[in-house]
Amino acid sequence: MLDNLRDKYSKEYDRVNPMDGVRVDLPEGWTLIRCSNTEPKIRMTVEGNDKETVEMLAERFGGDLEGEMCGWGTEHGVETPHLSH
Image 1 (cartoon, rainbow, N blue to C red):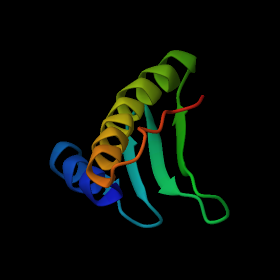
Image 2: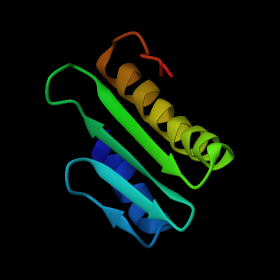
Image 3: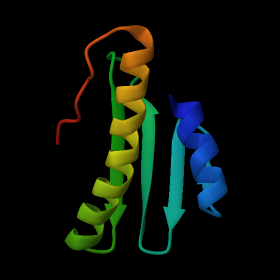
Image 4: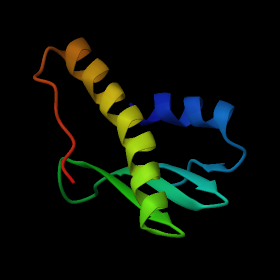
């Protein structure tokens, strides 16, 4: 799942860091998507220059993550997980 996002973002963005998940750095902020080390969860952290930017980045990257999670669930025969905010 994270490999798919890493590949997608590497084609779309100039600054993608694959260390400890997938981090995309943009002029207006950054997003990190990674597996939790302590829980069976995927975490997404977003930081931006202002509240609107954080919301925009969370929606953009959260939508991609949710799409990957739906595909993974279908492939593995499990109920589709959902994002919580």
